[in-house]
Length: 197
Length: 240
Image (cartoon, rainbow over all chains, first blue to last red; front, side, top):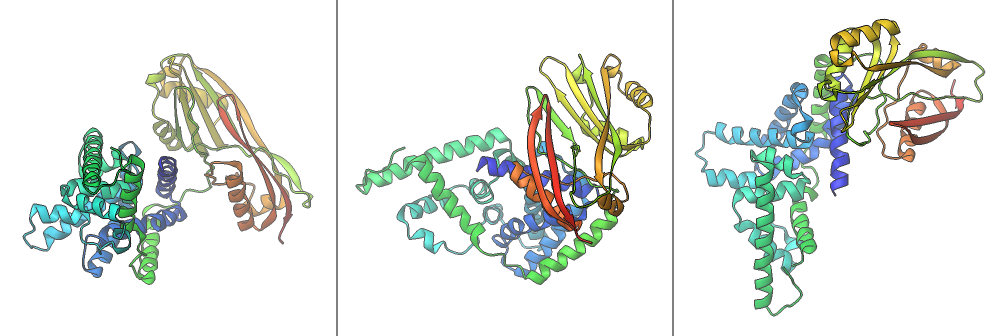
């Protein structure tokens, strides 16, 4: 997964550099590769389909205007775009003039508006993991979503959520360790002996 | 739960977010694409020519690239009679014996050289060694400056190059007649970004087919010293 992510990120960087130099085909390829992850990110966090498509359009126009601002030393192109999407989402909710609590906003950013995961949740183990994930702080849930759903590096996640890479890694390490401990205890209570920490 | 299984479960749960098909109407995706591409052409007018890039290969020390170009070493077409040798540019190898940390970023050097309008296409690569030495490779396609002028310009701009060793080589290729007619004797590059020779060969064939050239390509990737070279040989017939 790391090699695939590295190749993908390198490809996107090259395409962006070419797009900046006037290669419209390179920009087209970037748009087509990045449209779906952006669509899914926003669709899992917004109820109204029209709002999603409006935001996607705004986002890609902004992305186009800011090609020259991309700095590869700070993270991948995909992470940069998803960070913009995240910020656009926050601005969108603020502009609705509803009073949104910090917890609700954090929940939205964690992507908790999706449909139930029926097929996967038939698996009891996955069900346990899913339940435990939902009990985690919303910011941690968002980090897990970005890591496992969007295959982002720790550095990119840090940039997206406004934290440091070290803090993100520590959060993952601690959370995974706690998950494993809880799952091991649960299985002991259930009489299963197949698990280990 | 073992680490690997837990990671797999987490990935499976997260993949639900990714597994649904795009909910956007295909027409709206295409409509937005057309709008963006039209705007892109206005915001970022295209420079003439193409560029050939490779995936950077990391060496001992630090290798940083900006717009690296590869020389096409030879092109042959067995059915087209017209061939000729053409000088296509100059390649400079600059060895900096010390002070590598004072060198600019390749992108800065590239921006300076392009701003000075010294050639149609320029590429820069800088390889720094942990000993403080560095090697700079410049390629200038259709250059508009003599060798001596270029060395003087670089030394004036970058004092760290005062004691550097410069070697200048002509870049030349055998150009097939009808291709040359089509592209007007301009230097051309093919965009390749593959990780192995088969992937690059496939991309070369796609490019040639787009030029109306149906044939076969042989691709060899090899390393010579600090350079990674791609040798592309094509053979075939060209569509009228």
